Length: 240
Image (cartoon, rainbow, N blue to C red; front, side, top):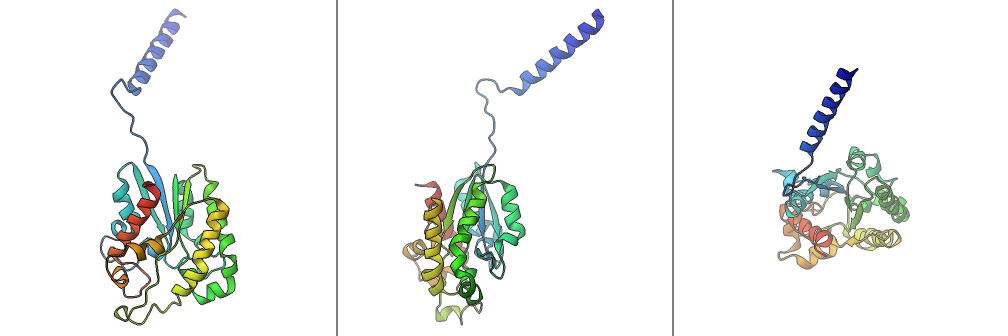
């Protein structure tokens, strides 16, 4: 019996010594997990038309460089995605939507709406955009991490003879300016989330003609445009 008691005391002593090794001493620091940023969007967020080093040169990658190692900026863009639940390719049905949800982000940055300007989407379902935007914000609000959420206005749709004949998808600046952007702002007000004014800030802060910030389709920002978007978003989210 005495031998059993001694053996238990020895085991307890070793357990306490092991636990003590896990506790940092004075002057030591515990490395905190990085703050998770989910960049939710369409092909603009994904970095469509960027042929080299896409993940680093699309705006989520630009943001990663700006925020540093204490943050993890993940690109959850899906090519062609709409915010509209009844659009031709709803973001809600994509693997990236599931991935962003599973990521359980601390910060969510949403940039959707460009594909919603297509006539087959906006004419039929545009009246539902604000409600769908509110639903998307609400979905992320209810995640375990209770993230801070920002919603962006998409970049301009540029038409210039130097860019060719247009984009061929029906994506257009008129619907973006007079339909999508006002709907984004209404949803943001209703849900009390900040708007990142990417559209207006790109026009305001551009130091070159706007077409130089876009690929030939006039929809997808090139690396120069992606870098500008990344800086605009960084300043709005982290440099208040």
